Length: 314
Image (tube, rainbow, N blue to C red; front, side):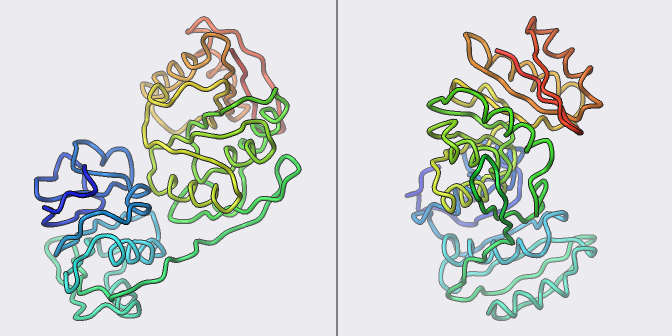
């Protein structure tokens, strides 16, 4: 989608790209919504001041992201998407609190706020204010690799408020590796591992991949705050990420067996030709994930922590 396309009739946020019809354009919360040429990720939209504006914006609010996301989306609508006097509408369900969302929009300066219901869907909308403040997500400070770091984490991302034990163990092992020009962090989240490795000099720069566009927005924010170069890509396929001498991954163990097998095969493929791969899983899952490496004909060295294990190959 061209940033200079001026034919946008409506922006739709949180809708599958396959549902979009020109002159609609879409903004995706995650990779499942990126299908088709009419959608961009939220992390891209937040950093694109030349997006064309539209008279209407429609937002499908995710149930698990929290009301704090409304403030972020308010900024996006006001400063990137809506024409002066245009109308924006949130679509949500009863348990998400339509009344409280309407009150919040009023507090944010929206005019003519209305509430309607169609079946289970509640529509809360109005005319956004002329300006908005970019919210600062809750942040915490931590120390990794001898460096004091600060990370913003909110909007339903994994492990807000602290760096999880698996990521910490993976960082410890990765920090013992020889320095490399670049590192790929598959499942970068809000960026603690990628940021820590670059700040410590293990890599000169990082590329972070994730299926969550909101997490990528936070990762980019955290990279800037901590002064490290990070590029991002929203994808479920590690094969779409540029080749790097080192790849790290805190493996998502909640996905189904077919997706797990595909992910592990793609990760092991990145370790070919002498490149290094470090993955971390809970210690109780070591045997299961060792088998994925064995299936690909790859040998493994294990680095055990208290609750997790890092599996190294390449």
